[in-house]
Length: 171
Image (cartoon, rainbow, N blue to C red; front, side, top):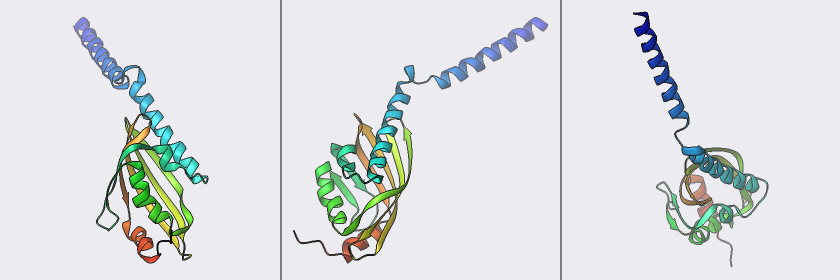
C-alpha cells in the first residue's frame, strides 16, 4: 500500500513539475518574449524621445504602409492608409493649430507578442492660448520593429474642438 501511495505521489509531483515547466517555456528559446520585449522597448524609446522634445515620433515608429484607425464617431474618426497619408491628413492639420505641440506627460506601455498598447496622457497649447489635454490608448501591431497597424482611441471632442476653433494657417 505504501509503495502504491509513493508511486501515485511521484506521478503527481512529476505531472505538476512537467505542467509548470511547460507553462514557463511555452515559447521556444524565449523567442516570443524577445520579440515582445523588443517591441515594447521600441515603443517606449519612441515615446521617451517624443516626451523630451523629439519631432520624429511617427517616422521612427510607423511602418511606411501603416494602417491607422481613429475610432469614434466624430469628424476625425476614420482610417488612414500609409504613414504619409496619416501625417498629412491627421497629424499636420492638428499640429498646425497648436502653439505648443502635444507631448506625452504620462505613458504606460504593455506588450503581448507582436502587439503593443500605449496608454498615455498628452497635453499642448492651442494657438488661441487655450490648453489641450487628452487621454489616448493606441493598440499597435508591430512588424519588423515598426507599427504596421494602429487602432487609436481618444476623446475626439477636444481634438475636433481644436480643429473647429482654430483656423488652419495659410500656406
